[in-house]
Amino acid sequence: MQAASSNKTHYVTRAATLADAKLAAALFNRRSQKYYGQDQIQADALARHWESDDIVLNRDTQLFFCAANGDELVGYACVVDPRKPYVEITYQVAADPDADNDEALWDAMIEWCARKDSSVIDKSPEGVAVHARASALAEDVARCTAYERNGFRRVRVENHLRAELDRMPPEPIWPEGITLPPFDVERELPALVALDQEVFRDHWGHVERPFEEELRGWKEWIHSLGGDLDPALWFVARKDDELVGYAICEPSIAGDTTRAYVAGFGVRAAFRRRGIGLALLHHAFRILKERGRTAVELDMDSENLTGASRVYERAGMVPTRQMILYEKLLRDGTDITVRSLG
Image 1 (cartoon, rainbow, N blue to C red):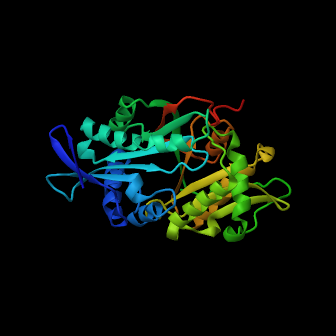
Image 2 (cartoon, rainbow, N blue to C red):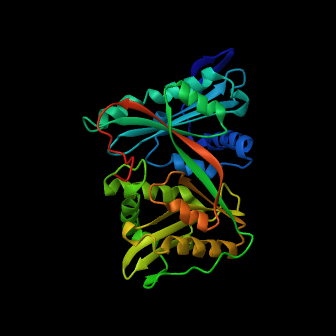
Image 3 (spheres, rainbow, N blue to C red):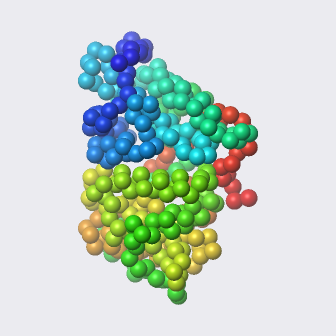
């Protein structure tokens, strides 16, 4: 344990262990309940995330406890290994809602994350810009203010969308030659990852990574799903043997089985504007409705460069909340992230 102080409150800090997953999940859920009335994550899902290769707990996490009550977790800081080509590092910080007004606590958590910046810069290609990234719910003024106070600037808004499944969605209308056979996750995952890489090359903020890195990231995400991995909800459209679009759904959100989540969605550029995306959403929503789900949710860039927002709107999805995306320039240079279609 290390000692820290903030205003008139003293804290002790240490790295997280797997045994802390329940404690940390409770902290996240207290915050999400305050701001949008729903839990954010389950402890077992957080533990699986911590087991990924992208996080080394004793290196990448720091817990802040109230010194007066050593069992009271009041703050969490984490950085995630950005993987090659090491041009961005993500900060994740959260405070107990009762500590929202403790600016020094927020600053201490962000400053702890910042101490990891140099290791990323050291790995990045020479002459390339390196950024720190973070996000916060728009209503989460304490977190937004903390990022801005520490040199971050707002660069983007992400919408959280929701469609009510109070009635059966329309039958999908598939373009000629498009089929939707069952998807074999184990055998066909590399082909899907390659499709995903192509789909997101024209999305804001995209960073091109080696295929092996992307594949590893997908496998880590699949592991983190645990019981929410349901290959029957992986809908992949094809033209002959070519994968052309996908909608990957998770059957619940933080243990709430009334809601489902679209974790991945996209259509190959050459096949867009043919109705494939809308057909995928209609098909997925019908299956979820048949399984008893009453709503389906999804996150998207509010200024999506490809026009996907129109597809979501036609599928009946509406914004329910917004996340502010932040960036801080750590090293100037050539920016290799996608900023525009040009």
